[in-house]
Length: 88
Length: 88
Image (cartoon, rainbow over all chains, first blue to last red; front, side):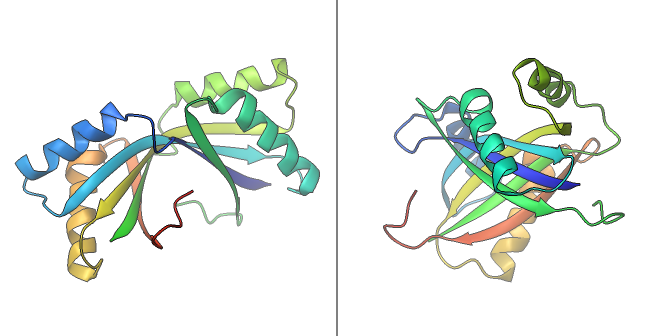
């Protein structure tokens, strides 16, 4: 069993009101020196069986068709091997 | 300028209806072999100046007090150095 992480972020040219709201609130809350904030989604998928090229290709297709709206969002797929009993 | 990524995920013992909805939809959509899905948030912060221990400590505090609800959520802080012109 392995964990695959899919990160979905708005494309750089797309306005991100959530991220802007966070960024504008930071100086008010005493945190300076952060020039931009973008907010996106993180999906952690627990995959049965080995994560080989075929499985990754399917997860890539899944992310492209279902998790991300590729008109306005970019996504990345990363494998995080899950050691048994090493859950955070 | 560097990019710092804060990932915020619901704690493992907290029910995640969004992730469950995704997981239950997958077989219907033709994707089998995924036993669990958790959905969380990813924040990309563009930090002015060097990301030293003091800056990281401040971002850790920011994440703890403002980005994550630590009663129900875990968060991780990661530094992603941003090469100029290497934007995806």
